[in-house]
Length: 279
Image (tube, rainbow, N blue to C red; front, side, top):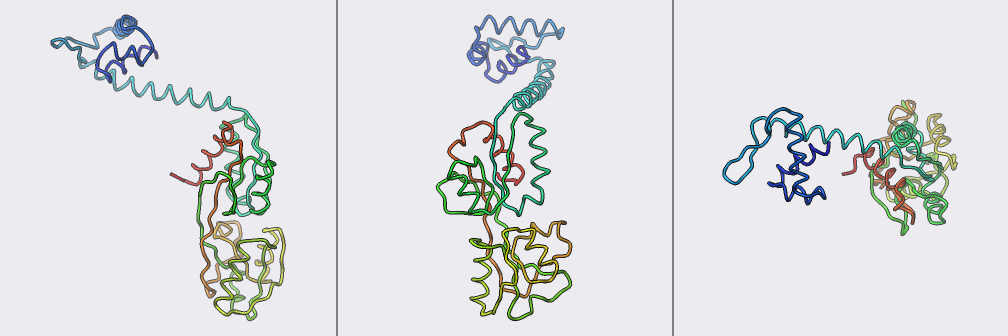
Protein backbone atom coordinates (compact mmCIF):
# COMPACT_ATOMS: atom_id res chain seq x y z
CA UNK A 1 0.00 0.00 0.00
CA UNK A 2 2.85 2.41 0.79
CA UNK A 3 4.42 1.76 -2.60
CA UNK A 4 1.11 2.28 -4.42
CA UNK A 5 0.45 5.48 -2.47
CA UNK A 6 3.91 6.82 -3.34
CA UNK A 7 3.41 5.80 -6.98
CA UNK A 8 0.15 7.77 -7.21
CA UNK A 9 1.84 10.75 -5.52
CA UNK A 10 4.72 10.69 -8.02
CA UNK A 11 2.27 10.72 -10.94
CA UNK A 12 0.02 13.43 -9.47
CA UNK A 13 2.84 15.72 -8.33
CA UNK A 14 5.13 15.15 -11.30
CA UNK A 15 8.39 14.13 -9.62
CA UNK A 16 9.97 12.13 -6.81
CA UNK A 17 10.95 15.10 -4.64
CA UNK A 18 7.40 16.49 -4.33
CA UNK A 19 6.06 12.99 -3.70
CA UNK A 20 8.68 12.60 -0.98
CA UNK A 21 7.51 15.82 0.69
CA UNK A 22 3.90 14.59 0.70
CA UNK A 23 4.89 11.21 2.17
CA UNK A 24 7.38 12.64 4.67
CA UNK A 25 10.22 10.62 3.10
CA UNK A 26 13.40 11.34 1.15
CA UNK A 27 13.60 11.26 -2.64
CA UNK A 28 15.91 8.20 -2.61
CA UNK A 29 13.35 6.37 -0.44
CA UNK A 30 10.62 7.08 -2.98
CA UNK A 31 12.94 5.93 -5.77
CA UNK A 32 13.56 2.66 -3.92
CA UNK A 33 9.79 2.17 -3.51
CA UNK A 34 9.29 2.63 -7.26
CA UNK A 35 12.06 0.13 -7.99
CA UNK A 36 10.46 -2.36 -5.59
CA UNK A 37 7.03 -1.86 -7.18
CA UNK A 38 8.42 -2.38 -10.69
CA UNK A 39 10.24 -5.50 -9.50
CA UNK A 40 7.06 -6.94 -7.99
CA UNK A 41 5.01 -6.14 -11.11
CA UNK A 42 7.75 -7.38 -13.39
CA UNK A 43 7.84 -4.48 -15.83
CA UNK A 44 8.73 -0.78 -16.00
CA UNK A 45 6.17 1.80 -14.87
CA UNK A 46 8.13 4.86 -16.03
CA UNK A 47 10.22 5.70 -19.07
CA UNK A 48 12.51 8.62 -19.84
CA UNK A 49 11.37 11.33 -22.24
CA UNK A 50 14.06 13.98 -22.24
CA UNK A 51 14.52 15.00 -18.62
CA UNK A 52 11.09 13.80 -17.57
CA UNK A 53 9.86 10.46 -16.29
CA UNK A 54 6.54 9.54 -17.95
CA UNK A 55 4.28 6.54 -17.49
CA UNK A 56 4.53 3.52 -19.72
CA UNK A 57 1.33 1.93 -21.02
CA UNK A 58 1.56 -0.56 -18.14
CA UNK A 59 2.13 2.32 -15.74
CA UNK A 60 -1.11 3.97 -16.88
CA UNK A 61 -3.03 0.74 -16.25
CA UNK A 62 -1.39 0.27 -12.85
CA UNK A 63 -2.25 3.88 -11.92
CA UNK A 64 -5.97 3.28 -12.53
CA UNK A 65 -5.97 0.14 -10.39
CA UNK A 66 -3.75 1.72 -7.71
CA UNK A 67 -6.24 4.54 -7.17
CA UNK A 68 -9.10 2.05 -6.87
CA UNK A 69 -7.15 -0.15 -4.45
CA UNK A 70 -6.20 2.82 -2.27
CA UNK A 71 -9.80 4.05 -2.21
CA UNK A 72 -11.03 0.65 -1.02
CA UNK A 73 -8.20 0.37 1.48
CA UNK A 74 -8.95 3.79 2.96
CA UNK A 75 -12.66 2.97 3.14
CA UNK A 76 -11.92 -0.21 5.13
CA UNK A 77 -9.63 1.69 7.49
CA UNK A 78 -12.30 4.36 7.97
CA UNK A 79 -14.88 1.71 8.92
CA UNK A 80 -12.45 0.07 11.32
CA UNK A 81 -11.55 3.34 13.00
CA UNK A 82 -15.21 4.39 13.21
CA UNK A 83 -16.19 1.15 14.93
CA UNK A 84 -13.62 1.92 17.63
CA UNK A 85 -15.19 5.27 18.55
CA UNK A 86 -16.83 5.01 21.97
CA UNK A 87 -18.90 7.18 24.26
CA UNK A 88 -22.36 7.90 25.59
CA UNK A 89 -24.87 10.17 23.83
CA UNK A 90 -28.00 11.20 25.74
CA UNK A 91 -30.53 11.92 23.04
CA UNK A 92 -33.99 13.44 22.95
CA UNK A 93 -36.44 12.96 20.08
CA UNK A 94 -40.00 14.10 19.41
CA UNK A 95 -42.81 11.57 19.30
CA UNK A 96 -43.54 12.19 15.60
CA UNK A 97 -40.43 10.31 14.45
CA UNK A 98 -39.93 8.11 17.52
CA UNK A 99 -42.70 5.81 16.28
CA UNK A 100 -41.66 5.79 12.61
CA UNK A 101 -38.21 5.32 11.11
CA UNK A 102 -36.25 6.26 14.23
CA UNK A 103 -35.92 2.82 15.92
CA UNK A 104 -34.73 1.17 12.70
CA UNK A 105 -32.29 4.01 11.97
CA UNK A 106 -30.91 3.89 15.50
CA UNK A 107 -30.36 0.16 15.16
CA UNK A 108 -28.42 0.76 11.94
CA UNK A 109 -26.25 3.36 13.70
CA UNK A 110 -25.53 0.93 16.53
CA UNK A 111 -24.33 -1.65 14.01
CA UNK A 112 -21.94 0.89 12.48
CA UNK A 113 -20.72 2.19 15.84
CA UNK A 114 -21.15 -0.64 18.37
CA UNK A 115 -19.11 1.15 21.05
CA UNK A 116 -21.28 4.28 21.09
CA UNK A 117 -24.05 3.94 23.67
CA UNK A 118 -27.23 5.96 23.19
CA UNK A 119 -29.87 6.73 25.81
CA UNK A 120 -33.11 8.08 24.33
CA UNK A 121 -35.81 10.28 25.84
CA UNK A 122 -39.04 10.71 23.85
CA UNK A 123 -40.97 13.86 24.68
CA UNK A 124 -42.28 17.16 23.35
CA UNK A 125 -39.94 19.72 21.78
CA UNK A 126 -39.98 22.30 24.63
CA UNK A 127 -39.24 19.61 27.22
CA UNK A 128 -36.36 18.20 25.19
CA UNK A 129 -34.75 21.56 24.45
CA UNK A 130 -35.02 22.51 28.11
CA UNK A 131 -33.26 19.24 29.00
CA UNK A 132 -30.51 20.14 26.54
CA UNK A 133 -30.17 23.57 28.14
CA UNK A 134 -29.80 22.02 31.61
CA UNK A 135 -27.11 19.65 30.34
CA UNK A 136 -29.27 16.55 30.82
CA UNK A 137 -29.23 15.77 27.08
CA UNK A 138 -26.43 15.95 24.51
CA UNK A 139 -28.49 16.02 21.32
CA UNK A 140 -32.13 16.66 20.46
CA UNK A 141 -34.23 16.21 17.31
CA UNK A 142 -37.18 18.53 17.78
CA UNK A 143 -39.36 21.14 16.13
CA UNK A 144 -37.98 24.69 16.06
CA UNK A 145 -37.56 26.28 19.47
CA UNK A 146 -36.09 29.55 20.73
CA UNK A 147 -32.71 28.48 22.06
CA UNK A 148 -29.03 29.38 21.87
CA UNK A 149 -28.03 25.76 21.19
CA UNK A 150 -26.22 24.85 17.98
CA UNK A 151 -28.87 23.88 15.43
CA UNK A 152 -29.19 22.37 11.95
CA UNK A 153 -32.47 22.27 10.02
CA UNK A 154 -33.14 18.76 8.74
CA UNK A 155 -36.76 18.85 7.58
CA UNK A 156 -39.65 21.26 7.10
CA UNK A 157 -42.87 19.24 6.70
CA UNK A 158 -46.24 20.93 6.38
CA UNK A 159 -48.76 20.51 9.18
CA UNK A 160 -51.98 18.79 8.15
CA UNK A 161 -55.42 18.15 9.63
CA UNK A 162 -56.19 14.50 10.35
CA UNK A 163 -59.54 12.78 10.79
CA UNK A 164 -60.92 9.25 10.85
CA UNK A 165 -60.67 7.77 7.35
CA UNK A 166 -64.04 7.76 5.56
CA UNK A 167 -65.62 10.20 8.02
CA UNK A 168 -66.63 13.84 7.62
CA UNK A 169 -65.80 15.01 11.13
CA UNK A 170 -64.06 18.12 9.78
CA UNK A 171 -67.47 19.45 8.65
CA UNK A 172 -68.88 19.51 12.19
CA UNK A 173 -69.38 22.83 13.99
CA UNK A 174 -68.06 23.52 16.45
CA UNK A 175 -65.11 21.55 15.12
CA UNK A 176 -64.11 18.82 17.60
CA UNK A 177 -60.36 18.81 18.22
CA UNK A 178 -58.06 16.22 19.78
CA UNK A 179 -54.77 17.90 20.62
CA UNK A 180 -51.48 17.42 22.38
CA UNK A 181 -51.53 19.50 25.55
CA UNK A 182 -49.78 22.87 25.53
CA UNK A 183 -47.36 24.43 25.16
CA UNK A 184 -47.41 22.94 21.66
CA UNK A 185 -46.71 24.70 18.36
CA UNK A 186 -49.10 22.34 16.50
CA UNK A 187 -51.88 23.30 18.89
CA UNK A 188 -51.09 27.02 18.54
CA UNK A 189 -50.99 26.85 14.72
CA UNK A 190 -54.31 24.97 14.57
CA UNK A 191 -56.17 27.39 16.84
CA UNK A 192 -54.73 30.42 15.02
CA UNK A 193 -55.79 29.04 11.62
CA UNK A 194 -59.32 28.30 12.83
CA UNK A 195 -59.61 31.73 14.44
CA UNK A 196 -58.53 33.49 11.24
CA UNK A 197 -61.01 31.41 9.22
CA UNK A 198 -63.83 32.11 11.68
CA UNK A 199 -64.43 28.41 12.38
CA UNK A 200 -65.77 27.64 15.87
CA UNK A 201 -64.06 24.79 17.70
CA UNK A 202 -64.00 22.82 20.93
CA UNK A 203 -61.32 20.56 22.39
CA UNK A 204 -62.79 17.12 23.07
CA UNK A 205 -59.53 15.48 24.18
CA UNK A 206 -56.08 16.68 25.21
CA UNK A 207 -53.09 14.51 26.15
CA UNK A 208 -49.30 14.73 26.43
CA UNK A 209 -49.14 11.52 24.37
CA UNK A 210 -49.18 11.72 20.58
CA UNK A 211 -50.20 8.05 20.44
CA UNK A 212 -53.26 8.83 22.57
CA UNK A 213 -54.21 11.81 20.37
CA UNK A 214 -53.80 9.72 17.21
CA UNK A 215 -55.92 6.91 18.65
CA UNK A 216 -58.64 9.42 19.55
CA UNK A 217 -58.62 10.79 16.00
CA UNK A 218 -58.81 7.23 14.63
CA UNK A 219 -61.83 6.61 16.83
CA UNK A 220 -63.58 9.68 15.40
CA UNK A 221 -63.49 11.79 18.58
CA UNK A 222 -62.15 14.79 16.71
CA UNK A 223 -59.65 16.25 14.27
CA UNK A 224 -55.92 16.16 15.07
CA UNK A 225 -53.02 18.21 13.73
CA UNK A 226 -49.61 16.72 12.87
CA UNK A 227 -47.42 16.22 9.78
CA UNK A 228 -47.93 13.52 7.13
CA UNK A 229 -45.18 11.49 8.84
CA UNK A 230 -47.93 9.96 10.96
CA UNK A 231 -49.68 8.66 7.83
CA UNK A 232 -46.69 6.78 6.43
CA UNK A 233 -48.12 3.29 6.90
CA UNK A 234 -48.50 3.64 10.67
CA UNK A 235 -52.04 4.96 10.96
CA UNK A 236 -54.16 3.47 8.15
CA UNK A 237 -57.37 4.52 9.91
CA UNK A 238 -56.41 8.20 9.59
CA UNK A 239 -56.74 10.43 6.53
CA UNK A 240 -56.00 14.04 5.74
CA UNK A 241 -58.96 16.38 6.23
CA UNK A 242 -58.87 18.81 3.30
CA UNK A 243 -61.84 21.09 4.06
CA UNK A 244 -60.02 23.09 6.72
CA UNK A 245 -57.67 26.10 6.38
CA UNK A 246 -54.09 25.52 5.27
CA UNK A 247 -51.52 25.14 8.03
CA UNK A 248 -47.89 26.34 8.00
CA UNK A 249 -44.75 24.26 7.62
CA UNK A 250 -43.04 23.02 10.74
CA UNK A 251 -39.26 23.11 10.95
CA UNK A 252 -37.50 20.10 12.46
CA UNK A 253 -33.95 20.62 13.70
CA UNK A 254 -31.04 18.88 15.34
CA UNK A 255 -29.91 20.71 18.47
CA UNK A 256 -26.54 19.91 20.02
CA UNK A 257 -25.42 20.87 23.49
CA UNK A 258 -22.19 22.45 24.66
CA UNK A 259 -20.30 19.18 24.18
CA UNK A 260 -20.92 18.97 20.42
CA UNK A 261 -17.18 18.53 19.72
CA UNK A 262 -17.44 15.03 21.24
CA UNK A 263 -16.60 12.59 18.43
CA UNK A 264 -19.52 10.26 19.25
CA UNK A 265 -21.98 13.17 19.04
CA UNK A 266 -20.45 14.36 15.78
CA UNK A 267 -20.79 10.87 14.27
CA UNK A 268 -24.44 10.72 15.34
CA UNK A 269 -25.07 14.19 13.86
CA UNK A 270 -23.52 13.14 10.54
CA UNK A 271 -25.65 10.01 10.57
CA UNK A 272 -28.90 11.97 11.00
CA UNK A 273 -27.92 14.38 8.21
CA UNK A 274 -27.52 11.37 5.93
CA UNK A 275 -30.84 9.88 7.04
CA UNK A 276 -32.68 13.13 6.38
CA UNK A 277 -30.67 13.70 3.17
CA UNK A 278 -29.38 17.10 4.28
CA UNK A 279 -26.66 18.34 1.90
